Length: 69
Image (cartoon, rainbow, N blue to C red; front, side, top):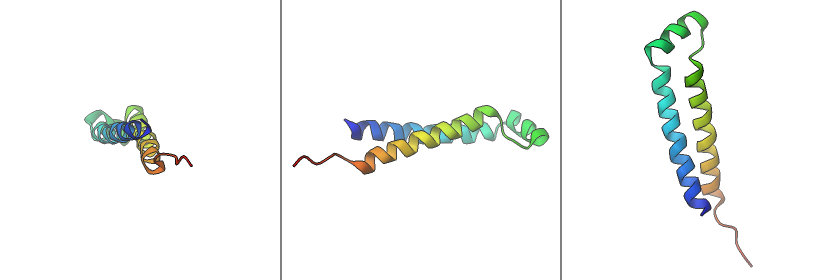
């Protein structure tokens, strides 16, 4: 069960990162970045959420199943 959740979180994390990259390249983000030097808040939250989800998912996949002795 943990492996399925790990794969799902990894996939969701990658999707959020791609979505964040698209949001950061939008026209409104370019205008805001021109004046403030920072991308939009939406793009930043998508990057942060995607990174966290991907790291947790990868951690669940790497950790694997606990061994019973």
